[in-house]
Amino acid sequence: MSIETDTAADIDGDHVEALATGFGEAIAELPVYQRFKETKDAVENHDEAQAAIKEFEQIREEFMLARQTGNASQEDLRKVQQKQEELHDIPVMSDYLEAQNELELRLQELNEIVSEELAVDFGQKAGGCCED
Image 1: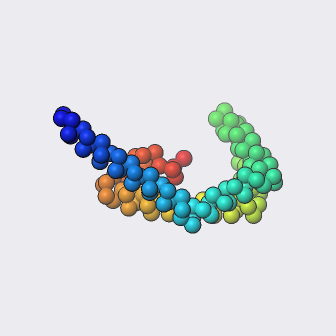
Image 2: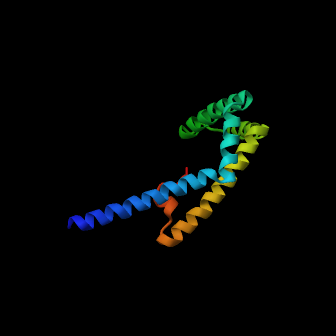
Image 3: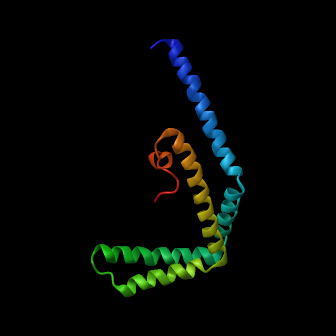
């Protein structure tokens, strides 16, 4: 490869990186992202929600361990589901979950636009934000 080709590749790469940075910044300015961030901060600063999250995670972890050893019962599953419902019933948590869902939908729309141009599922191939 010649130096000129390498330089052209660097310029194109720099341009794409600048576009990607701008894309990320534009997403961060979207009202749907701003709402997500605000509701996330509200949950993080809400004592009742934090206590309920901690309790739910502990019960879920116990259930997962019991399931792995074959000792999980339907009652254990119901207990996990009940704690999850209680968590989701906390107003700041339900607001957060709604905002998270709206953001995920918007990011999926953007992923589809990018993926169409690439003829590949960009979000999935890039280790997208919306997959667990």
